[in-house]
Length: 134
Picture 1 (cartoon, one colour):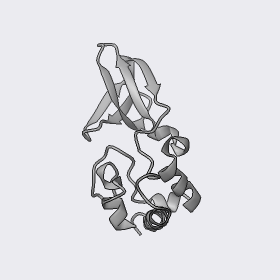
Picture 2: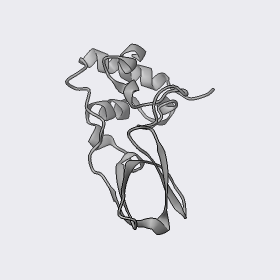
Picture 3: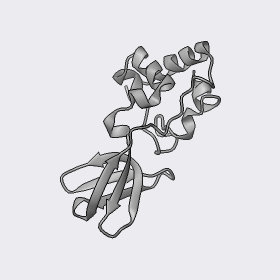
Picture 4: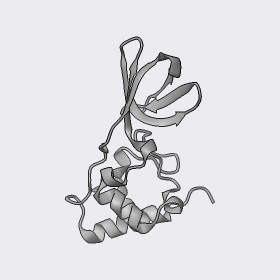
């Protein structure tokens, strides 16, 4: 499963695990403690269907006219923080936001055409083993 995550599955090109990897997609270091096997399999095969609202790609229109795109990593009373595809963190002050639209589709591709059924099962088993710092 770990070899599929890093190789054929292509997961490690976007996801981070225990401090290794990019920040462009959610950190999966503790995903095994958070999701069921069925939920993980659904996320791998139908990413848009299983996408949590916090993981939706966001486009912010600013009062300066410059769009900011990325994955929302945090939001508080005064600001929104996004990480873009290059892994750069951007903070936008809410008073500078003209519009904010969350995407409906996931940038994550399905592994259905890349991995066999057995390989998907192995990848799910690996993801279930990720339980954060213990």
